[in-house]
Image (cartoon, rainbow, N blue to C red; front, side, top):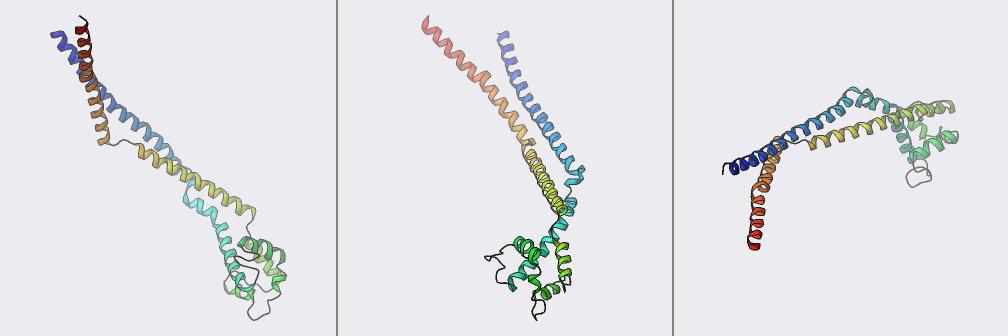
Length: 216
């Protein structure tokens, strides 16, 4: 009888140990997740290229020039029949890089008119255009050059990488096991182990005993 009680006690103790180990596992799991999260967070804090200030600085020249080009495109659509959305030159890029840069002399012909496109452009404060040369300088000043494009592309890549890190950090945070869930895992582990060790085991023992009894 004592051996049976000792055996049952050890089995019960084993179920308790298993549930404790499951609790220990949740703490170890959180430590691993937190370490991975800390590495990513350190990258955001220490990698200067990923700072929003640097990303915005790299975009600044490009964005400023695009804004000016959009303003000019909007004005051009009011002065020229073939400029504007749905027209021959329907994008800012086409108007700026094809019409103005390649054929800007043609677009200077109306400068002496009372309601000149270029006089109107001067009122926007983008530059004082009163000659072919001043127009050429204006176009060069606000045309996207290779450095502007490279800086912008670098900024976009850095921003994309930063957002990827932020998404990974959020994902890791969502994987962390809170205290209530830890207790729930340990409790459920104990209940499952208890059911297997006692109820299921007793049921199997009873079935085997019944089979042996029927055969005897």
